Length: 401
Image 1 (tube, rainbow, N blue to C red):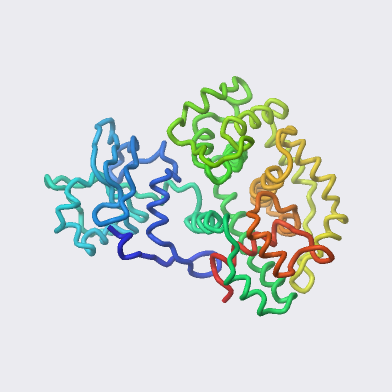
Image 2 (image 1 turned 90 degrees about the vertical axis):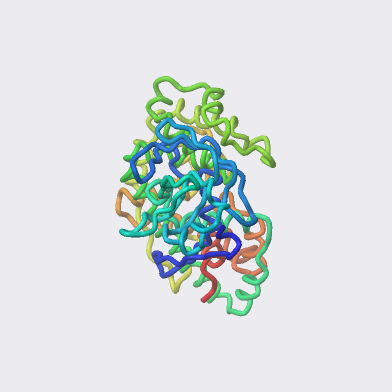
C-alpha cells in the first residue's frame, strides 16, 4: 500500500511543476470524483463501481471489500491504486499474498509497453482502470480543490507570517500574480469542458457542479450527465427522482438546511423553469462584456473599477440568467467559477479583471481573516474580492517562492 510510504509524484503544470500525493488519487477513487458512468478498463470492458470499498490506512491494498461489475460480471475483492503500472512490481505486490484478492488496479497513467502485468492469486490478469481519461478536470484542479478543503477550517499562520514579512504593495502584487495563474487554469478547464460537452452541456454541467458545493459536486455532475438541460426544459424530472438517481452519493452531514441537495436541486428547477434557454442568454450577455486594462503596477483598484464597470447592474443581469433562483455568495460563486471562465473560453476575451474584482462568494472565513489581518483588504483599504481569495489559494498550493 502506498499510503505507508507517502508517495508523491511531480507533474508539470501551467506555471511549472506541482506535486500530487498518491493519497489524492485514492480520494478521487473513494469519492467517485470522475466520470464513473463512462469508465472502461484497458480491455474496453464497462466498469460499474458497486462499492469503492473501505479505505485501508494500514498495510495491504488501498481499498478492502470493494465490488465492481466488469461487462456485467460481478467481482468482489480489493482495489490497489498507483500512478503507474510498474509500481505494482516496484512495491513487491507480486510477491505479497495480501494482494491476491485485488480485483482492479487503478492507475493515473496507462501502462507503458512491456510493463509488468499484475495477476491475482488465481493467476488471472487483474483488470486495469486508467483514471486520466475519465477525470472531471485536469489533475492540477483536483490539487487546488484539496487545498481549499483543507483550508476551510483554519487560518494558515505560516502563510500569514510570510506575507507579513513583505511590504503591503508586494503582498498585493504577489496575490494578483497567483490569482492570474488560477484564472488561466479555470479558463483552460472551462474550455476543455466546452470541447467535451458543447456550450449548453458545459453550462449545465458546471452550474450543477457549483450548486453541489464542496460536499456534493460529484453527484450533481453525475445528474448533469444523466439528465440533460433539454430534459429539464421539456420534462423536468421530479426532485425525488433526481435524489434517488444517485442516492448512494449524497453527503448531508454537517450541511446547513439551505445547502441540502434537495434545496439546491429545487433551486435549479426554478432556474430552468424561469429561464429555460439560459446558456443562450449568458452567451449574449458575454458579448457585451469589455476587457479591462491590466492592473496598474500589479494591483487592481477594485472599488473604482466596480463603479466604472457598473458591477451592481451586472449583478442584476447575472441574476436574470439564473432566473432569480440564486442570491448572495452562491450567486457570486456561480459568476466567478462558472460564467466568467466559460465566457472567456468561448469568446477569447481576457476577462481576468472582471473575475478578479468580482465579489468574493463562498470563500472560507479563515482565509478572509488572513487577508484582513495581512492588511490586504479591510476598511479604508481594498474591498474583499474574488481574486484576492484565489491568490491566497494559489499561495497555499505553490508556496511563496
